Image (cartoon, rainbow, N blue to C red):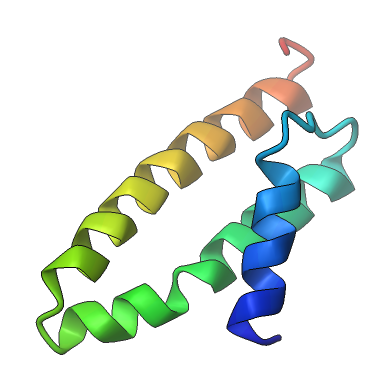
Amino acid sequence: MSEDHVQNEINKIDEVQIPTNNSEYYTQLKLMVESMESDVLKTERGNKAAATRLRKNLRLLKTTSANFVKFTLGKL
């Protein structure tokens, strides 16, 4: 997947679209991880802005993962 395509998918997800089943949560998590690839590579080369974006995205990934767990337990 191209980085632009992944970013477009992430933007669609950010539009207050709450997943309604396990498959949608998994797709959302997968897209989030794929979108971080370029920032990981840039961070390895010393790009501090990419490192900041990466940390922000990792926090969002953590929150989304926790929500997925709650969803599977029927608490969300």
